[in-house]
Length: 359
View 1 (cartoon, helix red, strand yellow):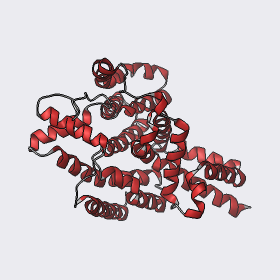
View 2 (tube, helix red, strand yellow):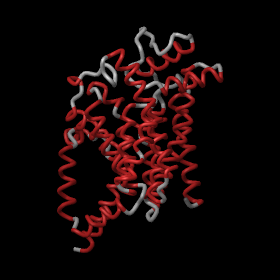
View 3 (cartoon, one colour):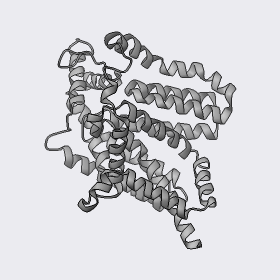
C-alpha cells in the first residue's frame, strides 16, 4: 500500500472508532437473544456448570469457541463477559476496517480510487456497524475470513506444505467458531486441486482431517449426542431459501441505493433490478469485455478464493438460516459478499464504459 492510502485507511479506522463509540457509549453493546445465550453460557462456565445457558439448556446451536474465548478473557482480566464482548467487537471494528481496506487495495491495485471508494462504503455500512455494535461472534469470523484470503493468495503464489497446514488450521478454527466456516475447507481443497493437482489434494487430506477434528468431535459427541442433529435443533420448515435470497439481496441493494418510497417495490424485490442489470450487461458488453472479466478473476490471486468462498458461503446461508431471523443471522454472509459485489460492479461498469465509448 502507498503511504497516502495507509493514511487514508488510518483515517477511516479513526472514523470507525468514533462511530462505534457513539453507537455504544451510552448503553453498551446491543444484546440479542443469541448474545444472551452466549453470555449466560460464559457465566455458567465461570460458575463451573459447563456449557449451559440461562434456561438450563445445553449450548447446541453453535460451536463453543466464542463463549470459550470470552470465558478465558474473563478469567484473565476478572472482567464482566458483557464488557469484554463489547470491547472486543469495538477493537475488531477498527481491525476489520483496516483488513477490508487492505483487501480492496490488493484487489484494485491498478485503480486505487475503487479501493478507496469500497473502503469508505464498508466503513459507513450500517450492516457492518450493526454487527460490531452488538455482542456477536460475527466480527471475529470476518477477521478470520480476511486472514484466510491472505494465506490463500500466498499459497497460490508459492504453494507449500506449511501454507496448507495454515489454511486448514485456520479453517478448523473458523469452523469451531461458526459451523459455516466449513466452507473454508472446501475452498482450500479446490485451491490445492487447482494449483498442485489431484495427488497434492489427496496428500492434504490428513491436514484437513486434523483441522476439522475438533469441530467434528464437538458436533458428534456434544451436539448430536444431545439433539440428534449435528448442527443444533433446526427444522427444515423454518428455512426458506427463496425468501432468504430475496431478503438478503434487498439488503445488498440498500448498500448502494437508499429505500426511496416510489421505488420501494423494486428495491424490496431486487430480482427485478438484478434481471435489468444482467440485461444491460448483456446488451452493452462485448465478448472482449467478458474475457477481460474472466481474466480479472483468474489474474488476481486474491479475487479467485474470495469469489469461491462468497458464493459457497452465501448459498449455504440461504439453506441453513431460519427465515424469521434473517435480519440478524445472514448479515455475516451479506458482509462477506460485500467485496465481491463491489469488485464485480466496478469491473463490469468499467467494461460497459469501454463498450459505450467504443460504439
